[in-house]
Length: 479
Image 1 (cartoon, rainbow, N blue to C red):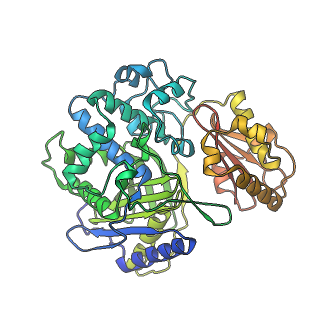
Image 2: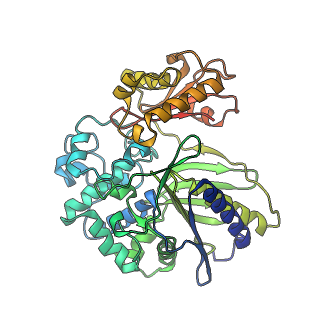
């Protein structure tokens, strides 16, 4: 559809929304950088030249680098174990680059754990994989967001080129586009915006900085609003370059924006969106705007989101400096406000519901069920010995043990949770994720994943996520 066929969100309304988000974060002690860009027109930006970690927005750069290698002969459908012989015999050995690019390896969402693994060396990851990693679904049967696959993509790249992955991306992507304020090593950015962890009382604590390593391809890039504006513009330009030579960066960026694996549908009374994952990017078909391309990022100390609208020639990016800052929500709120103003209905709120694409996950085993129950029961009675046995290394880094214990105590008292939990209270959503519905709080036991998300406020749940080895990587309490 030609440019101009959809109403362009009102820039003043978007600006007001982002200014409000920035003010709220500043009141908390953090800082926000953002930019709104028009193709061939003016830009609005705040803190445009200040570097932040962009977290999983990095995956778009990783996908571009893999695309360049594919143009030079890398077979995206050759199993990892044949591309990196050291991976032979591991559970991920039969997965492929294409499956990893599209989040189709069947290895589950692993953000809390993987976000702490950036500096891990390749041989350490191989040793870790040999301990017995667990897939949650067969390959190519659905969308399962997984950082592990992108870490292995970096290993594949290094096996092919014989030098660090970061050098490949810098030489073949950053430099040709003039991204002079973008890189992987925080020591190259003395003015990097400090990241913060927010405790249960709203206090800020400096987040630990990590250096480049095997997990850098998942989220290790540092950049600025200005450079990300250039990156988004390169993608918009690529879609218009119908004569781009195969194997060139514009041709690859065009392909990366093609949807390949269904994620979910979202709808409100006023619109619908279909979300599909491509190569390192999420694409959306939005009834208000046509095609939309985006990606979020979350990391210890940072949160980010970039989004562009090919049919409008518009792009937007938000970077925040608190752990998992909800930048996608900030962008969504701004875009919704801009659209509502553009159609003459300022203040119109979009109450979204979502339906995820089905994934045929494996059954949980008894050890995984027991680990989830034991972790949930730490909420009712915290035991350091049990926590030591169950917790992955990220847990105490994400929240110090004393703070976690105090938060559990407060929540338990507020929700009037007293009894230990049993399997009757548990639904295993996948082999590595379980939801405990607290008895006596207005809901039946055995609540499904969707119901646990969409049920009324009186639903009281504890969600436990395990990493690929079955260790506890997250314990989430319902509000």
